[in-house]
Amino acid sequence: MLNIKDSLRFKLIIGFFTIAVPLVVLLLYNNYYASNTIREQVADSNKNSMILYSHQIEAALNKETNFLYNIAVEDPNIAALSQLQNDPDEYYLAKAGILNTLTRYHRFDNSVDLQFIYSVQKQDLFNTPIKTQSYAELLSIKSTIEKLVKEVRPDSDFFREWKAIEYSDHKYALIRLVDTGDDFYLGAFVEMENLMIPLDLIHLEDGFASFVSDQGQLITNTTAIGSQRLNTSFASESNEVYQVVKKNDRKYIVVMNQIQGTDVILSAFVPESQMLKNLYHFRRGIIIISIVALIILIIYLVYLNDIILKPMNNLVRGMRRIKHGDWDTRLYSSKAKEFSIINETFNSMASEIHELKISVYEEQIRAHKAELKHLQLQINPHFLLNSINIVYNLAEIKNYSVIQLMCMNLVKYFRFTTKTNQVAVTVAEEMEHMESYIKIQQVRFPDRVTYHIQLADEAAKAGIPPLLIQPFIENAIKYGFDFMDHPFHISIHIRLLGTDQLEIVIVDNGNGFPDEVLQPLQSGCFLDNQSGEHLGISNVQYRLKHIFGQKTCLEFDNAPGAGARVRIVLPFRTVEQFTSY
Image (cartoon, rainbow, N blue to C red; front, side, top):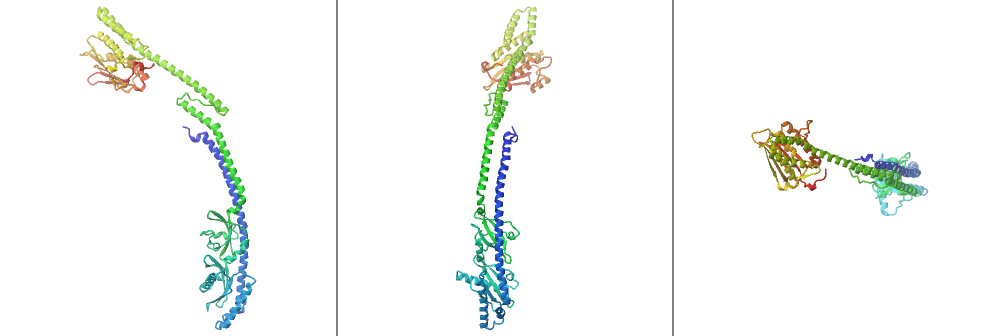
């Protein structure tokens, strides 16, 4: 069988993929490269916007921080508070003065939502007006601040930077504290949602901006990406790398920037589909080109298959059929001129080889026929001289009655042996011939040779090659007869085995086969020697082999208490069923 890796079809398919795969990979890489370039450009643009607005937020928060420090140092009311704690009226007037100062300042600067002062000693908190949409939210803000200032320690981060704190469900604010040094804290409170107002100027379209905690959790627009956390390592100004997050099969390109002086990060979420919308026609063109290229390559492969592979496969298939003996195989005309010439040449060669093979086969049959006829005739001269010698001796003693009997049997014998044109004879005719032969031997050796023929009625009409049994009778008398005390007896038993086999058994009471002869006979490698001995047995073996093939059996052994035993089993045929050989 042809190895598939060595086939032309396999090599063409490999060539097809060698062209198609790099082309598709190149187109896909171009698509990826263009998309990635757009992402980087959009991310860089939004990164710059994040840096710009981060600086604006930082400036506003720093301004507020400086204002708190200035109030703590310069406002006389702050310094007087610690001395007026025992005088309620004066203490109240001082608080009112401080709140008036804070309120006047924020008439021109509303970067924060409220400011407050807390007395650690008296646990007294007073603040500027709180602008809220509900009374519950006002209480929530106030309680959050009170809880913070009561629990805060002097070394807390709230005294060093603005820190995010949750004051209501999913609502956060930045708080900064300043220690006046007299057990009073100044503070500012900024809602994160109010810091997002300037970000509306960023053209994010379907995207959004958000503040992110230093743990990567969104503290505004908290439901935008679910419970996912961002990687805050991308928040450095020098780091222009973006990250991708996914929510409900929608991808966002995220850029971030750390707001200095706080623990929050400003981030922008840009929908990937929005930024790549300008690449739609480009990407569609790439896909169309890929599909068209793939279709063209497939059509080309089909074309090659029709023009080259199919005719080649038909040629190989035809050669295999010829190899297995199907000489009627012919190839049809091909679309390609070259293969048409090859197919015509193949058909012509197949016809010529078929005719030549038939001629050789017929010549071999004729040679076998001639050889078999020659073998059949070889048996006749073997007995001729002895027969003439017997007649001569009988003539000397003038035994005319025996001469007549001898001549009659000789006539029958040689009339049978000269039927060389017959393919087969019946078993009955063969046995009649054997009787003539044995009677001639009885004339030669009076009262020394006896015989018995047992022929089943259903086997009498069976057809066998002529002179099939005589060589074994002749060899039995020639080698087994030794002038014993009792007559030499030959038994011939012929019967049918089932309905399709004929059995012939020849047994004598002579000396049997010598060991040096019996062993090669039983092994099936018996050959005639140079002196011509056992020529008849060799002829029978040769004829049975060429007429019946492996369907025949020829066995030799020595019968217990008797002489030689020969058993022949061959297919049952009538004379009419024999074909010419």
